[in-house]
Length: 401
Image (cartoon, rainbow, N blue to C red; front, side, top):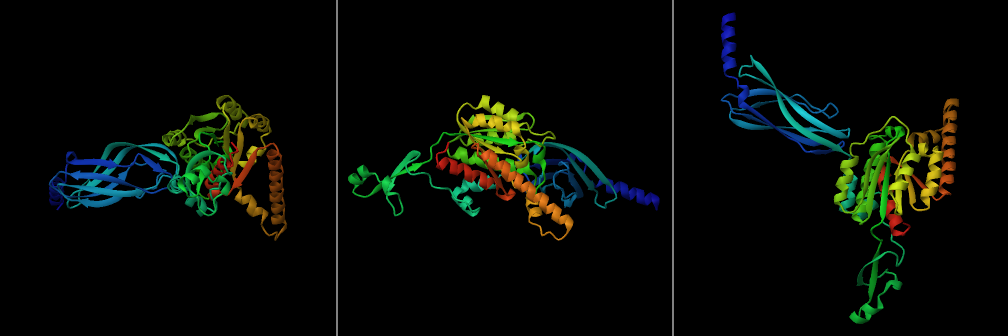
């Protein structure tokens, strides 16, 4: 019986595909947006005369969502497409080099394993969902979030066009020369001035690694910064980006045009949180030498950490003489919840009082900075991008820059 079983297994081995008859190809996108699902296709060509059962594991990074092994059957002489879905929760550049493939013979008495070298590079970039929604319809996006694009001051900005007067238009903008020529009421239309300089500062210090409901503070800041950059470039402004912690990590010089948006994205997509505290004085000193023209300095940072930085206030006072400063941070939801708790016990009462004390300190320091002309805004994590782009549009429409 042992001899018969051994001969049977040899016959089964003879009817299994050879390794040289199997060909593999991976189809995967070059870029993944963080936490969005993407499909990956593996093409397996069986050029032998035998079908097989397989078990497949792709060599994607461990941080990617995985559902392996994938199992199935492939007939002889056909190309089968194996599809699976994955997500990438961590930004960065990854190299996928291996594919592990195990297949069995007709009777399943033999199983062979192959390690296939398939090299692909994937860049995981920030989630651009909000940016795409804004570029499709800016007004609809902002209205959905409870904001709107505000009308600019009358007669301020660049002349855009002459159009027919409609009910609700400002009578002071009526173009009487064209009205007399065409014998119908015509009005001038203005739009905010283009060609302004916007400098986006992204803090990558230790506190920006604080976890939120979805991602951390840096992830939200990158998404909001990309949205503001898209809005500014679409408006014809010059945009530069600077990411920093204790030193300057990335600096993208100012440029205009939507093509510059890709330059910004590929420069900052891989920045990470450092374990060191942010050096605001150093980065403001760097900005003073690099940005000579008047610009809007839009800083994404941790609100509380920034308020404790006394040296930064000295540099900002000097920068304020030339530039317009706006700081946007994420509201501490835990602190707010603690301050709103019902004091049921001595312990909760103490926690509530300390939380309220911290909120009062924050308001006091914020008032001190705003007296120097430095605007500071806190927003909920889900509204950070909307608040940032709304204030940018408001500044442009009011011609403050």
